[in-house]
Length: 327
Image (cartoon, rainbow, N blue to C red; front, top):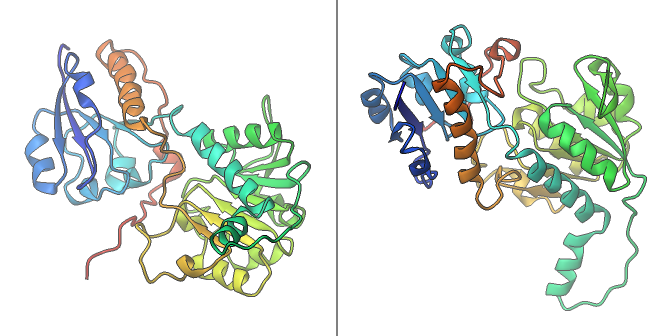
């Protein structure tokens, strides 16, 4: 196999990643629309997916694809019946976004404890107001989801002096993280945490997992951070808990429908931070995901097992709508 044909799906209006780095290894066809995707499918067995919101795979179908590599860690858009029940191999770009996302989580927790948003507001008002702030050291954090992002987050928060408990699907011991509690212990552990950080994928089990009942179980004044998937949180229930004064604050990098509509009430709450699904996007990240794909492409061409393969069947058919439907 000398130069296989590779389709690269790129979101309309977004920059093309530096696929010229692949010129010696593959013939890359960049597509953005359904018609372009259909036209490119003949003879293509490999898809380099750079648009995690794309609906092209649902609209057009995977055709003769045998391998899909995503530029993200999440594989939500691939969780369709046709793909999940096929023999298509799926791999993701582990090692690119995990540390940046963990740094973002640490950053927002520092912002909350040190009241930095208020400091900026007072500076704009030219107001000198001495205040006392909370310590980060020893703060109790519950990280829900011990996957690649959760793992990096736990390690960084512990290094910063925070007391971190981890919850996963099942109880187990982990060489790096120590004891991982099962989902069955979640409701009890929520009442012991100052901060709750969600790093969960979207599955039938996690959709709507954080609803009014769960928020009620959190400590008064606790803060929620979500860098997993938006649909894990029932947004209106979160707003209600914030408005009632039960939860202290929230920092959200993911939402059930993206981009977040201008009329969404999340924008207007002073104690809710809205971030445009960018916590993992460091300068130069597009080049790093191309390099991740290139390493696996070399293994594909050598008939070697691919790295970072994702078992879609474990996640199920749960593909969310990440872009609002047009009326």
